[in-house]
Picture 1 (cartoon, rainbow, N blue to C red):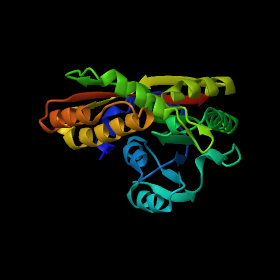
Picture 2: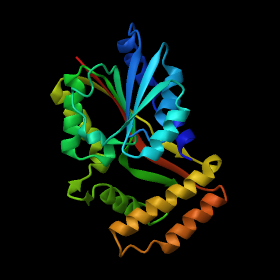
Picture 3: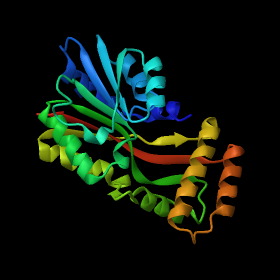
Picture 4: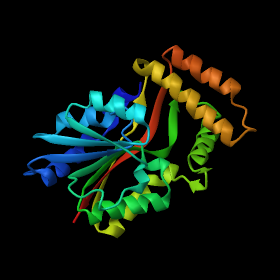
Length: 250
């Protein structure tokens, strides 16, 4: 459901310096981390010239099977936790890519990923990481409280892992720069209007639900009804902030 919104949001301006770096590569080997159903491959493979080989990496075998059918390039699948990757695993990889992944990692995991990419001499294109906040129009008095609770939920601790959430892009940029990479950053917001009504409704349900889980005293039932009614009527516009990051080893 989110694939079209993702495609519209990703910043195509980062492809210029990336394709310049990959120019002359006989066959581009792309490792897609947390590939899910293959959305990143479906977006990026047609935009990259020349022969490609995609290594789809995820810990969900059902998603891997789905992605392998739909990415328009030669593919192989790698069932693993992406946080375990090392520079040795990336040997021969031309590009590491991921979508909506960084905010699910910890600071230590991002450090390891940055180190592995730079040691392997491998660029990384990491897109659609949440950066906090959301803007809804027309406004509602509870918008800011729900947004703050959601952002705190994104930073929660899960099984001893403190997730970076909206701090992920800053942490990743710093980690890649410490490791010796040149970092480019671009905003990539979702802009949801009447044409994305179903996605807006699903996003609202998840956004408000996470906020309520984080702050049980927050009275969101009427708020959610108001917001969903406005979305169903085509009267709600939402901007959800993300950022794309390109890291180029020097």
